[in-house]
Length: 238
Image (tube, rainbow, N blue to C red; front, side, top):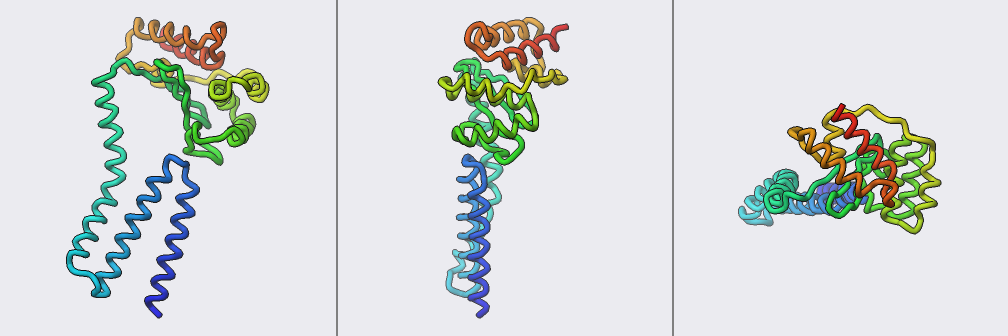
């Protein structure tokens, strides 16, 4: 009977953990499933060791698995950092601009002009925009329209690029009135232009010129992002 209770508890725990993992954003699910697998292996080895059905090697294996599970989050954080450092050494030209609102954080790649983003609030919190299908993006747009006009404009910028044939429809959906200008900090303005804290006035002017040439509405770019870039430059250079 105790064994049955233990197995039932383990099974219920696994069900809860799997359902929780399924609710994670797609880019986080793999890590969540991996943690479940490692945890299940650790529990299984512990149970077999306590029942006397596994050699001492099993206990050593348990310790190794526990250590690996504890080190995994650290490795996940460190490896991308190492990759980015290597990228800085081999491709210093790659730059990105970041524009944030209450609901979205949007990134513009300077080389390709591609937009990407992550949701900061709401039903799809922590989801990458590329993980959302058209219906989900419409649902997110409705939420942004209700909660934050800047977020609706940012999302419209992304949708216009991803679904260029529906640009008019998106513009209509996002037209909630002109977004109110929000106060910038120096760090936020530099992030919009893709610059570091050490940037000079010449660097700011050059970055602004390069970005506005790509995004200016007169050249088929995005008027909202162009306005944010102008705002950042005006803030940094009085």
